[in-house]
Length: 362
Ligand code: PMP
Image 1 (cartoon, rainbow, N blue to C red):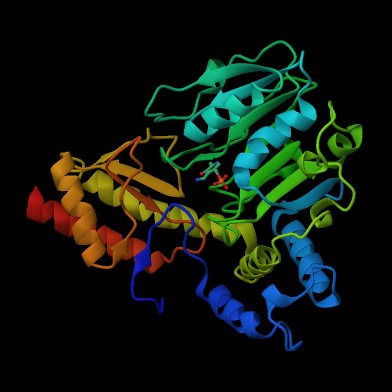
Image 2: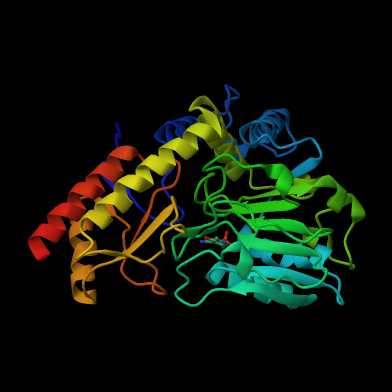
């Protein structure tokens, strides 16, 4: 049972596992009996090095990341990967294909256009309600890479499987809002990246999983060191976000002892079904904004009968301890973000509130 007074449905930064918060509280004062807090240790010292190495090892274990992939823990958020990816890999006269399934995908494509040619292999219509069907995707002739956004945080849509891509190309994925929420076949990707602040830890640390042959092939243009993946010392080129890495390490250890990605996937499917089923049960009052078959297990987006009633929904939910349910302005209405650490009881509480609110206002 949760020991916290409210349920936090925030889209990110978002809820963290309570056990992780307790461990972190302790480590702020004293990391592993050193008498020095985690934020006060040198990033080059033995105590932090142990944290760092364990975090990398647990990351590899959680997702079954093969040895021929490098793990980098960088800064600048997922948004910096929007430009680092094309800056390193997309030559001026080459093309990258983007699957534009939402606002973050749009931004990623926009940054790539500063470096090379961008082809939109699919573009949804606003407010992006679905993921493309395979036959709707039209690739360019020889894209360097294909970029996808596995979960569209704002619109509440999620890919169920990786798209097929042209031979000779590789798949780059912004997995910021569903990283490690279900099993993943890392071998299908050239690169996976994610800001930590939804499923992995605090804002500030960004996970990049990169196939080593891409790293070794090297960058296509000269770049400042901090923009290069192939810099010496990887994540340790400068002072990394030591605190963020520590918390990410605790979250990864929590995933492992909770049963790994299979169990995360099972829990997340169950939690999401509870809410989608409740919305369907009151379909005359609520409306899911994401199309069936594209619905996200991480961000459940829905509308009420009118904006006035939606405003009251959000305010009354907040007063009842269900916080952060206001939808993004691009979609309006409500959004329940239920990442890995979001407890099942919070979904049960929302289901009760959905029924009660519909009864009182329907
Ligand atoms: N991609 C997705 C799918 C996101 O949800 C977000 C943030 N909500 C971003 C990218 C941007 O991440 P950051 O703030 O870490 O740059």
